[in-house]
Length: 295
Image: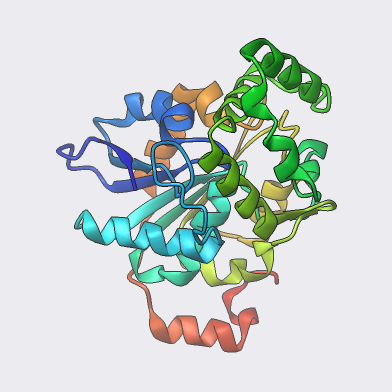
C-alpha cells in the first residue's frame, strides 16, 4: 500500500486520511495536507485498487478488508492510536475501522461520508447496475476529448454541482483507462451499491461510537450524497460535532482546504479521548440503549 506522509516530526497527533471511490490520496487530500504538516502527523494511503497501490484482479475489496489493510499499515508504521478521516467511500471504511479496531481509534472524522443512508446520486446508482464492467471496458479506446465529453454528459445528472465535483469525476473516468483500476472499482461497487443506492447503512451501529469523538463535515451543495445524511448522523450521536460548508459540494476538504484544516485542528485540540473499554463495548452490544444514541 502506497501512502503520503507529512508532519512526522511535528509532534502532533497521528491522523490517517482516506480518499473516496475511484480517487487517490494525492488528488483529494494534498491541498489540506500542505496546510496541516506543522500540526499533525498525517498519513494518506492509496487504498487497495486505487492510485499507486496494488490492483489485484482477485483482491478482497470489502469494507472489512479495507479496514484490516488500514490496521496493518498503522501497525507497520509503529503508530499507537490514530484519528481517522474518511471522505465519501473512505468514510465508510473509517467507520468500519472504528468498529473493528476501537483500540486503535482515537477520533473519527466523516467528510461527506458514505454509509449513512441509502440515497445517492443517479451517477452512483448507475454504477451499481449490471453492465458497469462492460461499459468501463470501452474507456481505453476513447481519446481524452471523448472522455471530457463523457464527463460533461454525466455532470448534467449532478445539477448545480460545484466545479470541484466535475474535476474529480473527470479524474475518475481517466483512472478507468487502467484495467486494474476498473476491476477494483467494479468489485468495490458490487459490495457497496446497487441500482437503488447504497447497500450498506452504518447508522444502525453508530451507538458503538458513543465514547469516540466524532466530527462530521459536509457540503451544502453536495449532489452526490445528501447533506441530510450527515445531519441525521449528528442527531444520532449527541456528542458529535457538525460543520456544513455552505458553498461546497461533495469535496468540501479540497474546495475549502483552509477552512477544513482549521476545523480539523480545532477538533483535534479540543476533543479528549479515552482508551477503548471492553466492558463498555460489551454493555453497548448487549443493550445499545445504554449509549444514549439512537439505533
